[in-house]
Length: 398
Image (cartoon, rainbow, N blue to C red; front, side, top):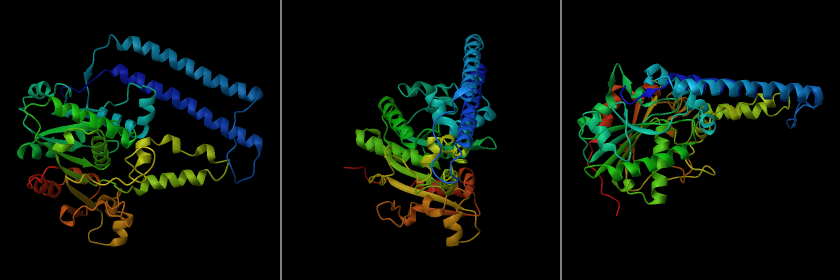
């Protein structure tokens, strides 16, 4: 795809760094288990801290040091090679694998400046736009910008290509048919939701400031985690007085876990169970799950705790949810939902009034016999999206 180039050596360098760091981390786990066995603590209680000592400790330090030394040598060699090897076009398979790696380890990739870390970008027809000069990028794709923008935000471990099915991007085509200029967001889903929200808010502020003709209306459709990122961006924009928020007319959520996803809660529960014994504590995977995945436990969109955040008052909000069941059933909807997100979470329902999102019932839609990812492609979902996106615009905030 145009504007989606990637240097294959940079990919190799990033993968090599991950392999070296993974090896060092495995040595840490083995050493912690060795230290625990030597200390012979009670079966239950706090984990044993500290490193091994003496010759044993020297062996572990030598293995880690040797691994890091080899890793630095490989990285330096590949960096030189990267400078002479030309970039190539990225493939859908590569982008999918990169998106998964970022979803699971994205915070680590960002923190270590790994070449595999995805940088946030707004894209049109596969081309990355410069938010300080977006019109030039649009015209390079043959598009003529107008004052209405539709932003499409993918979910965890995904990328902007995955809105397509059988070569057709239904969401972008629907946006163009309704008079919007469709833009896809690509981002590192392993970062905290609030970090991506802050970055998105800043990108949209710059985009709106340099758009021509002036932006009159923005609509956002977020799938899964993408809906949380959109809500977080709105919160940041409200706090910082961004102009683009005044143009936001519609927020559409597709299977967004507003109140969390059971699978991440299950992963957290496993960690708690392993932590009960000092012998199993080194195997707890809490640090292996990215910050973005951990935010999905309760649908957290703010830094410093899980606080209720209402929807923007001036925006028309809609929620589409899916259920694997063929008919209504409270137990299935509550525990299973679409396989990843329960119905109540996707529709913003909550027993705590402060956390309830209060999306009007007439703005809710449920698709039965449908899984989480099917919300991206099923024709009946897009029929509902069309109805919502072409609905008369509400009054702007005073």
